[in-house]
Length: 482
Ligand code: NAD
Image (cartoon, protein in one colour):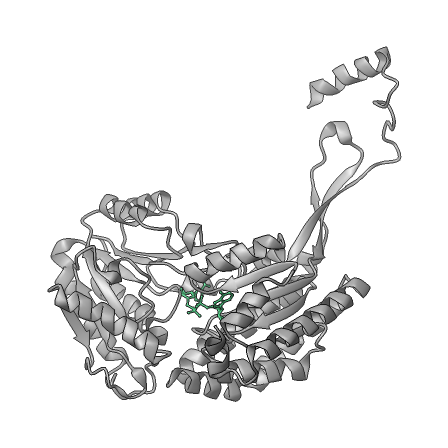
């Protein structure tokens, strides 16, 4: 345990945990004194978050690239900087409306009283983020929590130590510690973090660790939002343009070298199109990365351990005689741990790559003759975080969408439902609990407090004891209205 904490982060775990306790106590105290943040304070906090993201852009790009070995500059710009800033700007634009009390209908027998939901901050929010999009997945939930008027503590991943430190410094320069701060550290600090009695905890990471987070949080009855992973299918229907689907899937799978929670994990396509699909995806991959071995546009695998895990999935498939199509060299000694796109055609069901989230540039391509076949395959597994469907046959599309349950869906493209601030983002079943982004994020980090305002014209006391015949008569009239 200790090794995980001390391997990357400078301070020992015990120092990180002490810092966590200090910051949590400070934020709790600040909340006790000033529990409601005004609209202006929230806007100022969102501005701070936008400013620090933009002002430190080059520092973040460099830190993430060094943490990965190589991270494509444009990927960091698009998926970390732009996504974070646009999410915070969206919150700024809509905050006034989100903060307003929301009127709800009052039943006739309670009139002329009125009822409404009054959003209020929860208090101190904990955010645990993973290494794969280390900036976005720390700051996007932080923006939602700050918009909702909370105080925020962030625990980023120990696998991106340079980015975590840069983020800690940038946040410390913009925010009062009592409003937003970063605690660095690894597993031991993460455990202490989940045992801290936050008012809400948002965890992004693997399903296995998510379960432990939920268990630890349950001891304090801390509510959790769990943003987890899973095996997200890409279905190429009979009616699809294979080349267009292939371009999209190659992009979604090779962005960040497949280390994306919503990357297509595997492809389902009619059997007679298996090879044509692999050829089309290979062609699209070569076009995007003509010099995949050397280009800085292609991102590295995060660590030797992760590289070895991916390589062993391919080795197992090769040993079992599966047909493999590689785009790029298979030399594991690639500088900076770059891994070729490796397609595995119709592999046997018992392989590791058919049973665990791949989270790298390996793409099984499996046969599914019809919408019914695809539905059956998907519903035999855990509920995926994302689902992609390609084709023009709307009846087949609707059948798949109605009969499968996934966190979200993009039709005829990949990834992009995640970039819509008006759509909640989250998983279902093993791929997650709860959601954020846009108003859904504001709601996640708010208590929508139900309040009933009684009217002075209400027939107060009419049902109070002593119970008489008059009470019985009123009650019998009331019962006609409920
Ligand atoms: P991980 O679960 O190993 O770690 C995530 C975070 O949890 C890190 O900060 C880590 O330090 C911390 N942690 C580790 N052990 C802990 C413990 N026992 N208690 C508390 N905290 C602990 O995940 P990862 O490898 O960093 O990320 C990859 C996984 O995350 C994939 O499964 C991917 O699908 C998922 N993911 C999901 C989303 C999403 O939005 N749904 C986004 C990105 C990644």
